[in-house]
Structure formats: structure tokens, C-alpha cells
Amino acid sequence: MLDDEFKNDIVFARFLNYMQIALLHRKLDYGKHLEVIKKREKN
Image 1 (cartoon, rainbow, N blue to C red):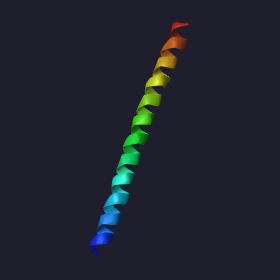
Image 2 (cartoon, rainbow, N blue to C red):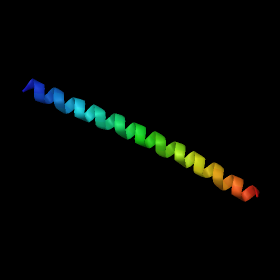
Image 3 (spheres, helix red, strand yellow):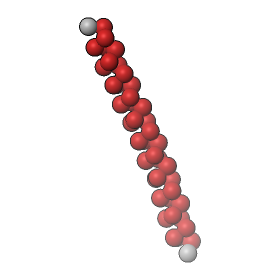
Image 4 (cartoon, one colour):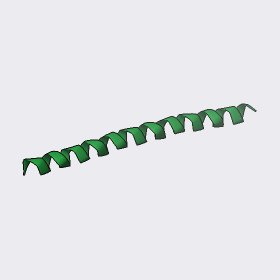
């Protein structure tokens, strides 16, 4: 019983970690996207 609960916690922790990484990448991509737009506007 305790083992199953622990397994669920590990899966949940991995999911949270994955979501944080995905959001970080999205944020970085958004920043790059804004830079490209600003460069285009200058030209």
C-alpha cells in the first residue's frame, strides 16, 4: 500500500518537473520570438 503511494508521488514529481521544463522552454522561445520581431521592425 505504502509502495503504491510512493510510486504515485514519483510520477507526480516527474510530471511537475516536466511541466516546469516545458514552461521554461516556452518562455525562452517567447523571448527569442520577441527579439526577432524587434529586429524586423528595425529593418
